[in-house]
Amino acid sequence: MKKKTGKKSQVAIEFYIMMICLLFIFIMFLKPINDRKLELNLKEIELEAKTISDIVAYNINQISLLGDGSSTTIFIPDYLSSDTSFNLSTTSNLNAVEILWQSRRYSSTLITKNISSYMLQPGELNITNKGGEIVLTQ
Image (cartoon, rainbow, N blue to C red; front, top):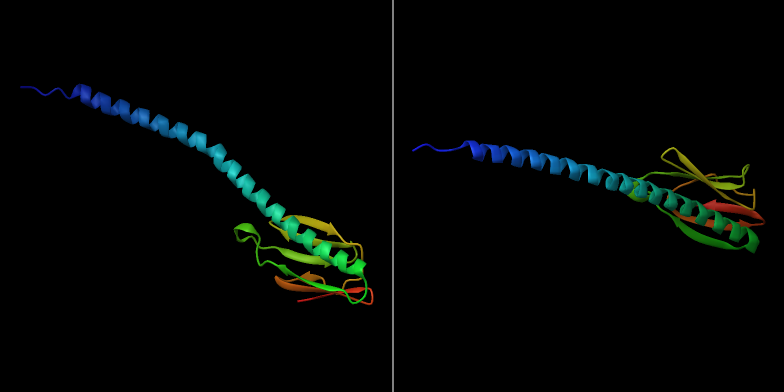
C-alpha cells in the first residue's frame, strides 16, 4: 500500500507561509505602537524635567517676594524617569533656573538676579532670603 504524502507536505508548506505572513503583519502592526510608546516616554521625561525646573524657580520667586528671613526646603530627585540624568543650575545673568537632559534644555524665569548658588545637586535644597539675596544651600 502506498502512502500519499504530497497533500500533507503541501498543507504544511502553506501553513508555514501563512504563519510567516501573519507574523509579518503582526510585527508591522506593533511597530507604530512601539514608536508611540517611545515618544510618550520621551514626553514624560520632558514634562518631568520642566516640572522640576518650574518648582525650583517658583520657590525661589516666592522666597524673594516674601522678603528677608523667609525660607523653604524642597527636594530635587536624583534622576528623571527611566533613570535619565540631568543637570540643574541657576543663572543670574539670564534670571533663570536651567535644566539640561538628553541634549535638551529648558529654562524657568526668575524675578531676581541675587542668587548665591549656581549648580544644584540632587537632594534637599534650602532656599533662604538673607537681606534680599537668595541663598541656596544643600
